[in-house]
Length: 332
Ligand SMILES: Cc1ncc(COP(=O)(O)O)c(C=O)c1O
Image (cartoon, rainbow, N blue to C red; front, side):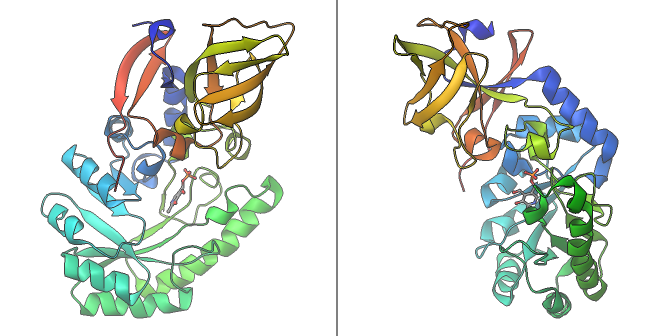
């Protein structure tokens, strides 16, 4: 099928840009130095490409993602890099896949034990006001986990507050953040120090593995902070109305785009004015007139919530649709 014939709106992945993103990351962080985070793309088909590239351990953010990855045969080493209080479904998975869960409290540790999970990472707060225990509590939690029969694989600490730090100060701030993780690791033991993301993949040598995921598809908001990666993901849309007052309307809106990082970019055809439920209104340019029925490419400002709104992504090369990837890890 030709891209021109695809019903819109449709989520499209540019195959050469995706391949380049994957190759760039694999060259920087080969094999187990990268534990790709599936939250960014929610697709086992895409994850399989990364496994074929040598990254066979993955991070997930939800139990559903863990289940889907295991069912797809990608359960060699799955880390739920998030806190959950009901680990029953993870315990079932642990019979057929390697399952590790992040814990940052007695409650989440007790949930892992009760659910039948056998391996944990101690999740340490390294500066982002989100999950993670106080670094000073990591050793106590690890000791308690071992006393309860758990294997403690090490620590994780997500320095998400530094992904968009300016280049001049990023490395020093990541180092200070990771110093807290390394101190916690002294107390917990274990082989794994898991941290990082697309914004710090090249300035965090302290982690044994980096948890990046956005780099595969990228979005307009992230590219300035990780310029080695290109915008592989776009929304393919159709002009459904043109107004002589200088604007036109596309057939996709809030229900097809994650908007928490701002407006999407309307490629070539004009400037986004606003986005409503089913529409993007953009200002047209005199030098680039558009007509009803024209196809327009739109770049999302945030990949993760955009992908989660779609059932599939179409892999496109030279205007041909060469593959369809189900977004099969949605839900909880
Ligand atoms: C726990 C965790 N690790 C790593 C990441 C890194 O992802 P990205 O590739 O988007 O920087 C995220 C992103 O939200 C995350 O929540």
